[in-house]
Image (cartoon, rainbow, N blue to C red; front, side, top):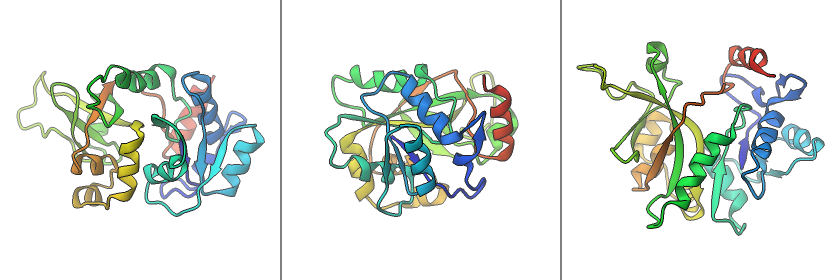
Length: 237
């Protein structure tokens, strides 16, 4: 499922910007389909423009019937009556979505014999100080089994005694959910930590859900700004 809003505060209409001949959202949809990992891929949108763009490419697209605060809510509405076990949320602004990363978040459920994991997500190590301090980069810290402890826009851990053991990880916004976890999310109200940081993954932690983080070395390019779009155009082959 690829949630896709037309409006975006930092880069309006970014999903419909041209990326080498096709809109960003179409490139992302095609990248997800081309992984060959899914029984079905859908774009879920509140926009007639995005709906028509996907439909025009012969893709699967659903019109969201309600206003939503976040992508998880939009996906929950779409899958409510579907007979599915695992739902993967791919961000619409990630046209470089790759098979390796998506395979990783799906595979953890196959190995989860005790049904301990509610959802899985991706993290990539970052070392650049500007990126570590950038509030637009969501950081994650994990326990010794790679379960998420917390997500923040601040640098975590705080480097009071920074050394070779200090690691910073960026949270990549790809999730794989058990359906029940997603249904729980959309009915549970936002709590203070999520409201403060504006990071939807925190809601799962605040309600005791377990998020398994999978490390990847694939960074890709997330299109949040016009400058990101120019980098994507330069990198596209």
